[in-house]
Image (tube, rainbow, N blue to C red; front, side, top):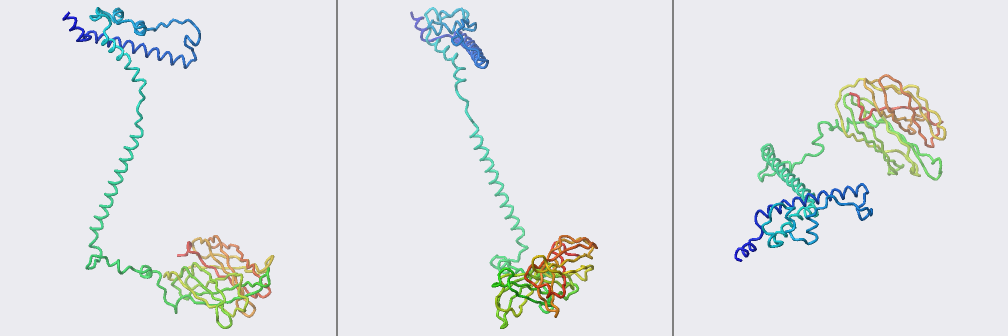
Length: 388
């Protein structure tokens, strides 16, 4: 009796546990095979025995598992496990049966348990690493910049309080560009050679007025080129009071060249315009010395336009060595007494050296062609194609 109590207290022996483990592996293999067959039948559309009604014998049925399902004790499974079972003589050992059930079900639990999704955690880690690298790189850049500023501090003229002279004596635009924009002076700048304006009734509404004006500007210097020329005109009455204003722009005035600005404007003053006050401003002067080349204009004809106003046709040729683009041409119309009636302008897209190019200018204002006795044309180069 004492021996029996000791056997019951110790549970299954090591040998029994080893055989149970081996049997559990056999059961797991059988389950895997049946699972694969079930999946294959589902994929091919083959029904089970209950679905098809066929009396199919399950060749892979595990008699040991069937006995367990029927409640048979482990003592009846000696032949399947193999060898003598030291605890069968006492009937089914609950501890051994529990171990076998647990080991046989381990694979099923592993298959049922869902795999953990680590993608969010990986994404968070990657973002954290990138942010850390950016922070470290930014601090390194700031530190390097501070070191450079410290190293170059001796190049600055510092005051007694350590501040830079640049803080108090910031150079003006004139100081920064004085080497290229300082003009020769008002007395020797561009000169207004002539001007004229005409105001007539609007061709569509006689109660309104429209007008045209032209201004000729001359560069008296043979070695200075003017760029960015703004010409502003203020219309004056007989008493010298302003009646309105308009302006024109010339991109380039070559050394020794005369250019013109002209325009057609609407809603002109209804009172007589006695004259204009003209102001000329140069954005930049450039010393070039005498320049070789120029423009040649031939076959000038001014006739009445199809609907109203006048049309001027001509040929223009560039005598410079390089091609020019966007060449401006302004027409100035004079009366028989020589006074300027007005004018208008156009642009020639491209001029190749020595090639006459046809062009035309249309002044579509209410101007009487019979009043025009002569036409003068003033070409000028553009910013992007200034002859060297």
